[in-house]
Amino acid sequence: MRAGIVGLVVFGAALTACSSDDAAKPSAVAGGWAPGTVYLTARETTDRGWLDRRGLIHAHSVHSHDACDGQPKDDAGVVNSPCLDDFRRGLCATRHDFVMLTDHNDSFGSTEYPDALLYDASRGDVLLERGGAPVANRLACPEGDPPLVLAGTESGLMPVGIERHVASTPAERGAVYGAETAEAIEKLKALGAVVLVQHTEKWTAQQLSDLPIDGFEMYNLHANLFIGAGPALGLIADLKEPELLPHPDLVMLPIVSEDKRYLERWGTVLASGKKRVTTMGTDCHQNVFKDLLPDGERIDSYRRMMGWFSNHLLVKPNAEGSFGDLELKEALGAGRLYGAFEVLGFPLGFDFHAETPSGIAEMGSEVAAADGPKLVAKLPRVQSLDASAKRPDFVVRLLRAKSGGWDVVKETAEDLSFVASEPGAYRVEIRMKPRHLEKHLSSYVDLAEKDFAWVYSNALYVK
Image (cartoon, rainbow, N blue to C red; front, top):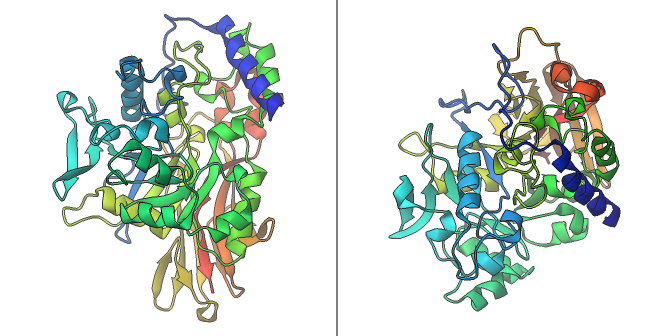
């Protein structure tokens, strides 16, 4: 771990060599998707009545002590306005539908609602209230739909969507937020929270099975950076010649990889018979790489980190055909979630479900092996792929949980179907060789032939 941290610190410090305050922002490739391009999810419901809503789960704002290069607030408690502005700009620029904040308790616990929701009436924010109290914030953006902000904390556990503080004083709150007990989990759920566990690498599979949590992370960006020290050294060697670097929004691609610790624990817990939703944690703080890339933006800007990947929730629309915090939390708790690394391109058309005699079963659902359920996965395409770019190579893989990880049950380069006669927890991943990125990778062009995870589904449970 120490070597990883040293590598990251050296990497961040060395980037001064290619910093430029007045560098021009890279433009999108005419006629198609390019790194940094974002799209709204479809506004209409799917053919099964769901809203696919894309957002962040695990993000830190000015209400975390270690955000904003360790200076989120001054000694008088006044927030760091430039950092807060960057958070809001990043959330709007990446066009997310929601963010579930996970601020650390030493600041979150002393921040009252609606401040904990980043509410600012002067900017046009609109509170979502229940019982006369604020529970979420529709954060106003200069353009586009307002993303919904939910409060939460990363302390002992990681409850998200907390509708109000658990007690009246910071000390009483901290006693619950910092606990890792079934009693604390019960109190948090009573406040409307979906209780997750952060940094899966720090927990044993036994703990993740025994605690009455709703789920844990299948991927965490911060944790993953610490195991990328080796590739970071290669990037450091190229920093004095920025023309050798990948596109600024792809600069982490040589470092970031799948984390075996997460995959192993995920498989082990589900193979034990437990149902857990799994999420992708951005864990953005704006506190790692303050130096600028050639596009004039710091490496770990909120926009750049927020745009790397997201969680897609299949949300049941409310009576108005829209969604609020309750609809998001219901989808999360039910396990109707897939994660997508949109840094490689926006997946359009992904689906994973089971067809049974009684109808369609979604991710997170249980189906009976005796009914001969057909597991169906749809291969997505890259939205607005540049017609002049090379075609990416895809693999659709169906996996079944086992102690220590996952077994590959079937894989194909097309849509997949499989009749599951053996009980177990099944998930799908879409893998990609991103050949369409070739012209954006400069001297790192070999990455265009590397096998990357593009989409991770949650599990279907065959009993």
